[in-house]
Amino acid sequence: MLAVEFETNAKNGMIQIPGKYREMAEGLLKIIILKEEQNPKISSRNKYFNLKKLLNQIHRKNIFQSIDDPVEWQRAIRDEWS
Image (cartoon, rainbow, N blue to C red; front, side, top):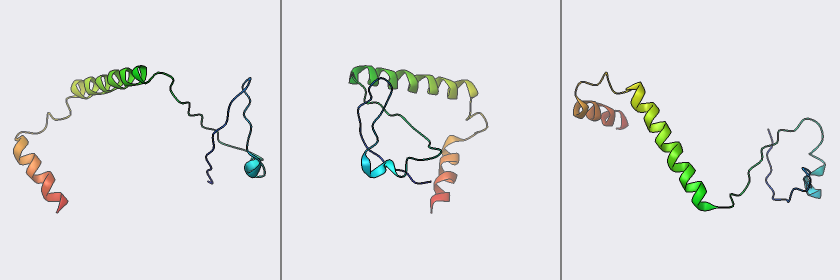
């Protein structure tokens, strides 16, 4: 898959594809829209709540229940790195 990146302004749901990319913009395309966030505080708040939600999910799944000795488990994991 070939990917290009450019910035453009949308008007009435339409975007302008720059001339140098128009030839490749024929046929089936996969479009991903990334929009700059207007308010960074909202973004930080959303990130906080998303992280909190994920940590709660991990807590509910109790993913570390099978670890009897956390220190020994960490040593074993570190040994795998070397």
